[in-house]
Image 1 (cartoon, rainbow, N blue to C red):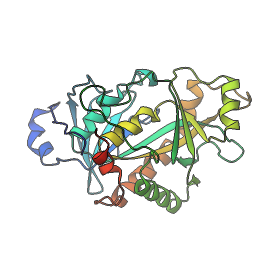
Image 2: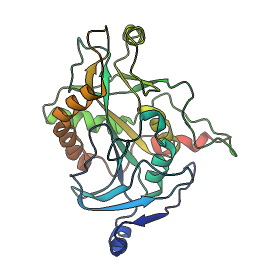
Image 3: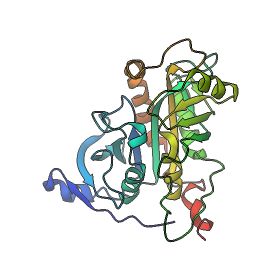
Amino acid sequence: MAFEAKLAYTLLDPKMKEKFEALLPVEIGMFGGSGNYDPTMIENPMELKVFTPYGAASDNFIVGMVKGRTLAFLSRHSKNHRIPPHMINYRANVWGMKSLGVKRIISPCACGSLQPERIDLGEFVIVDQIFDRTFGQRKETFFDGGPVAHVPFGSPYCPELRKTTIETAKQLNYKVHEKGTYVCINGPRFSTYAESIFFHNQGWDVVGMTAYPESVLARESGMCYVNIAMPTDKDVYGTEHVTHELVLKTMANNIERVRKLTFEMIPRIPKKASCTCQTAMAHGLF
């Protein structure tokens, strides 16, 4: 483990403290993306503010049980979608999850399809690669002073969580693409037509604004991480103008499918990891 994260928190209902602490450490975390702000799957939810050395997280964390497993939920953009992608405090969000004890993170997100001939709106892409185009504008490491660290990141996403997600989607008869490359742009603007055509011609599959540095911070923290990308628009060729309204409309039409997929996959996640995500930093410190 690269570092410890001590939990400091305030419960909105202090009378729930004993019940909350009985759930620790929390097993699984989930970042809710655009349109996915309501963690209705959580039984007996408790809301708390988590304090971090990196400032405030996007919102309060919601902690409870889902099908016999403990889960922490955080709205990535806040409940009212008031935080744009380039302003999200990714370090605080990930550090908060780690301080709760989380070892596995599920990260659903809206994105654009770069290959609309084979990846349609509302389908799921369980990406296995990422290409960063945020140009160093975001805080992308916990090691920016003190120890020098170089995290192994050739395979950015947890193979075990990806397998669980794919198998669950198939059992639900959802159209799922078993791999793909997510190109992460800084935002908050959408791509120009020239940029979209470039991304398309590179053979990349989806484009979004939030998967980086969330994914690498999870790896530094010793947490498994899976991205469930769902295209809400067709980003290429200038055939349509991408707007936030279009993204939210498409997401709203498919939000129950996203919730169903995550709800059904949670109890299927192995309690003991067989991957190397959680030990990736064992030889990363210099």
